[in-house]
Length: 138
Image (tube, rainbow, N blue to C red; front, side, top):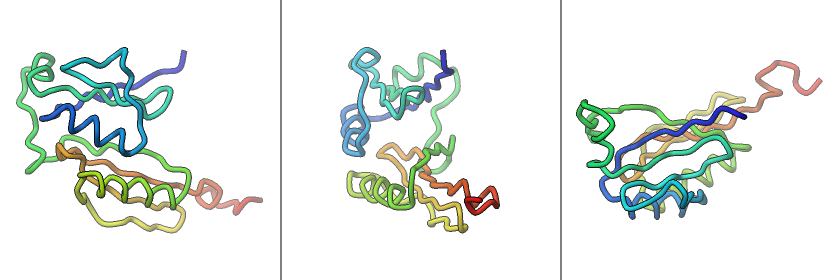
């Protein structure tokens, strides 16, 4: 079986967060969702568990990071093209997300970022693997 990752993120308003990610085109797995959590499906092996803050606190003795003043993680999703990077980030900003940084354009690598409604920092990156390998397709 392929290794899977479940990134657990605290959220203030579960319904707002679910709406945001479904507007970006991602599904919610109802088998792992209830009034305390929602499972966002990015791929067959990558998921984000959006947990209400009280539920999230059951799993840690540490304070929840204040995303208004700190960054607890940089979450990065790959894209198949520069256009897909722009499309996803534009959709995030139009759906209630906020800006998170400058556009990165380093030739074969192109990326943009956004913050979700809870301030979690998301990067979306396209990598032209042929150009990066230096083969130029040869």
